[in-house]
Length: 113
Ligand SMILES: [Zn+2]
Image (cartoon, rainbow, N blue to C red; front, top):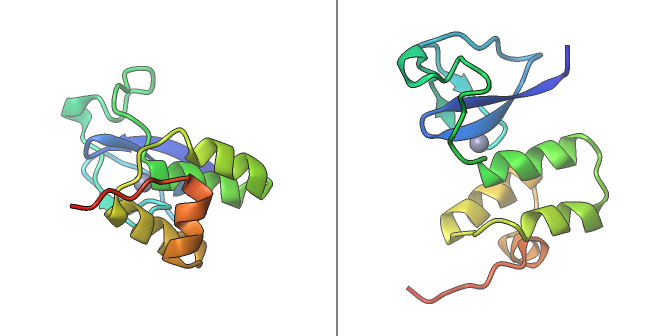
């Protein structure tokens, strides 16, 4: 079994560590992004192939990092997503780096609210 697997839950596709969690309907798990989410059978979350929710950007980058991708490729991947300040803050926590470093990594353009 692969160490990290995707799982749709609570409106996004997240990644979880199979060494820490076993996914079951109605059972919360903490994804790589730090969010605790709960897959539900009624929404088709447990039916791979019927997943229409978008990838969680933070989980996507956390997975690339966990798989040992070079920074250059992680950065290219990160550029595909839109990053809100809240997501950047979360990614900085997950990657153990600063907000500014994540802004640089993601190429996020900060918009004044
Ligand atoms: Zn996530």
